[in-house]
Length: 168
Image 1 (tube, rainbow, N blue to C red):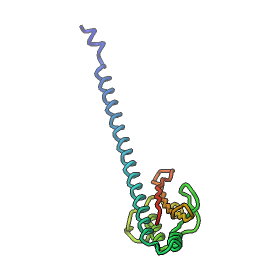
Image 2 (image 1 turned 120 degrees about the vertical axis):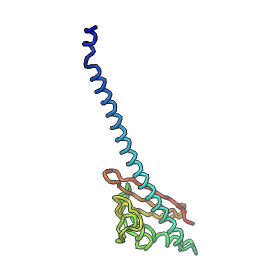
Image 3 (image 1 turned 30 degrees about the vertical axis):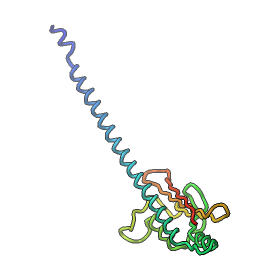
């Protein structure tokens, strides 16, 4: 009897250490899940802001175009064009002189000069990451493409949202 008690000495200590190890792994997994949930929530917030920025500009375009003739419609649409060249969030070309687009770019990039800003700017967004492309050619049906790009902190990849609408 004395021999069996001695052969099991220290087993309880090993069981306790294994239990603590399993508990610690569980806690670390919960911390990692929380960090992933925070990143996902931030990404969703940025995507929502990008949708809001694109929708706001589109509504301003729809309100401010001159629909009296087809030529006037195409001319006023062309004034909204902003950096129509380039791809993958590296846009180039002429910037729009239209006040609506200029204000929109300032809001999206956070360069309005007002403190606090009127709206939350998208992180990592520059003027070169915003595009308004207008296609008034025959068969394009006055297509307006609004692209909003942003780069979240500590994220090397730029994200983008594209809104396409046809103005009649």
